Amino acid sequence: MKKFIKDESGATAIEYGLIAAAMAVCLLTAMPYITAALVTKFNNIGAALK
Image (tube, rainbow, N blue to C red; front, side):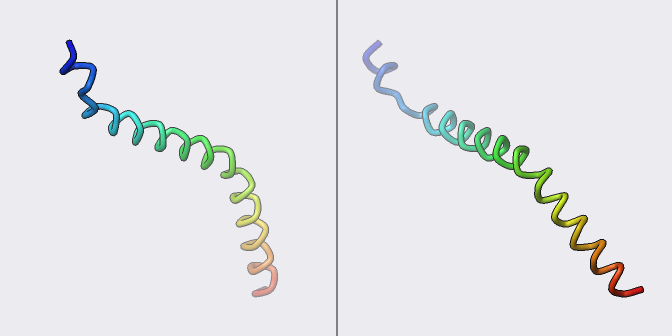
């Protein structure tokens, strides 16, 4: 039982999973703003080329 409690091999995988989940939430939150900005930029570029 003591060996099992001291074993930290799975902790790293869990930490990486939590980091990946946090990054996914941040990207999903920011994506509408980024998309809107890109659409505006490309529309401006398209209008300038006409």
